[in-house]
Image (spheres, rainbow, N blue to C red):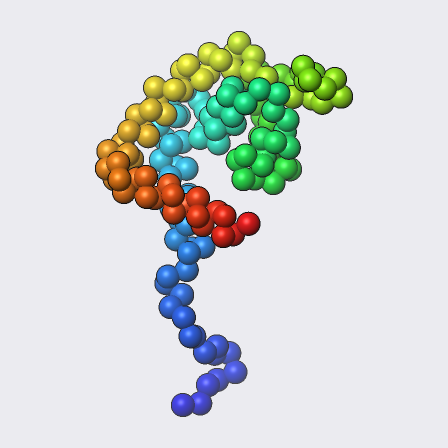
Length: 150
């Protein structure tokens, strides 16, 4: 069989592309959480940022970006939005006066309290649909893929 100049021989099944499937799932899951969180006026990525700022003391923008798996410029843009919304502030680290860290404001705490039950509903829907063991396997597989891709 003769190939035309614009044809590429295909050796692997491209429909099994991990990147394609993970991106599609990621977008769908992000939109799913955004729909649940919408009544609180917050997006899933913003909620994730606030939760990390809440649970990790003295977190910097760089540390936040690393924990969320995003590049620093994306995290910086997200932090600016949270700051403009009045949900976070910048403070000096208790351990290093040269280090600027992120802290929640009282408005940020109120936003988390408003969004938490909505997040819990979304999370419960996914966990209940998958059941515990498959859900735990999924999280483990996603962690493995993250490690492979680093």
